[in-house]
Image (cartoon, rainbow, N blue to C red; front, side, top):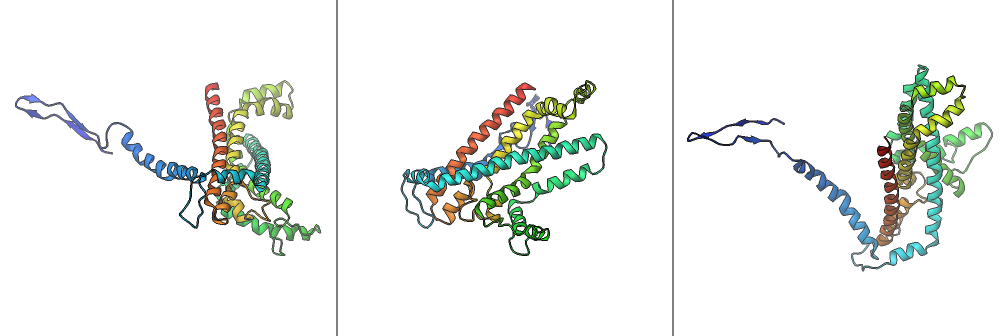
Length: 313
């Protein structure tokens, strides 16, 4: 932004103090006002409204409601809520574990390929990143076509070709949660690959070379040098993956809609179901507040790890 040069103005032989015009001012406050407005209107106010509505018995079809704890009481006394928590826990646990493992294998392979000056490492990274760039709704539709149990389903067609037979990927409750988890693993592996690849670049090559000269095998170098070196990054990656997976909604919605029955209904989807299908705004807001509490705990863990990591540097 152009700045008007200082000018000295003389009046009656005296000189006024030079005046400097700097547009919006010297401080950062004017620049932060638009961001603060967006933050308040788009994040803080909706959060406040969700918390407020969770303490009501509001219905989406009516405007009359009263403040009560019935929404929370109904949520915690509902046996289906604990089944949904178990489904969410299984979904998050296996998603995060395999996202981290597969991402680490890809990152380690790319890093080793670069050291050996192999061709195709950029292609591998690009392919891994494709799943990260695709919206969750589209991912759900893609995997739904792959899991389709009709003759046009990609996976069932391949299984029938080799003589295995069709599998009820989306209609069997147990297989459905496995299918959704596999799709989410494919979706979230890219983030693990990026973070762990960056962590591998910080490993001291001199240490690895010295260990190799001393006779350490590749497995020993991996366990005793590489993994301990990238452990802080890995823990941050696990925490972020957990936060993202707990909040997964779009992919599950387009893939199974929470079915069959409620076998793939996770926390975020449960809030949507309560509000837009059951028309119970208060109950849906209560589930959202519970989810907000889970996110607050995970975010606290993340910032604690970041702070310790910075202090350790």
